[in-house]
Length: 209
Image 1 (spheres, helix red, strand yellow):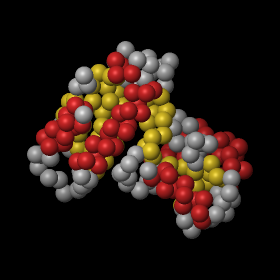
Image 2: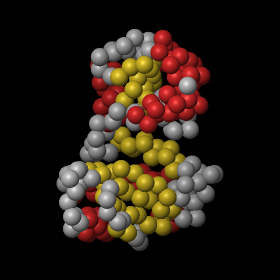
Image 3: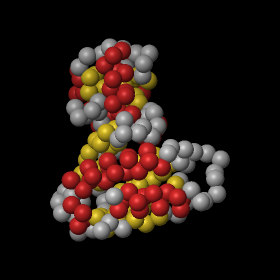
């Protein structure tokens, strides 16, 4: 409950800032201590209660599909150029794939998608059946999940939008916070503090007792 109150206070402070002409993103910054990120890298998919935005999804499929932006095998050769590869990695939040194409995808796209943490994975993103229902179900699942990759002692996550209700933002933060705590070697002890900010504001520090 203490954390909930601190988050409420932080949000009310952030909302005192001058309104911007766009819907700012709410960022959660998690600062760790006494935690070896090299030995204990964390890579989680956390289902959050309130969707932040529709993610831009690209699919590698045998044939074009009207439900999702598609790259088919005939187009793979276009991405032999690293510039073209980097462009699609920036353009899309998430990549999904038809299982039968995975070896080809690994060869052509792996060198860029892998390091970016966007390679289609069995955890969420590989389809054995291609039909409207399976694609739409996967898209909904991706939109309501947050990927958390911790590769350094400080991690920044988009956790909401300024236009969302405080309660919704707080609930998203608590779900993410609890998931991360579970995966830290010493739980709360590994947590230095949390920070909450809008895109254009200074962060509000939140100390964990």
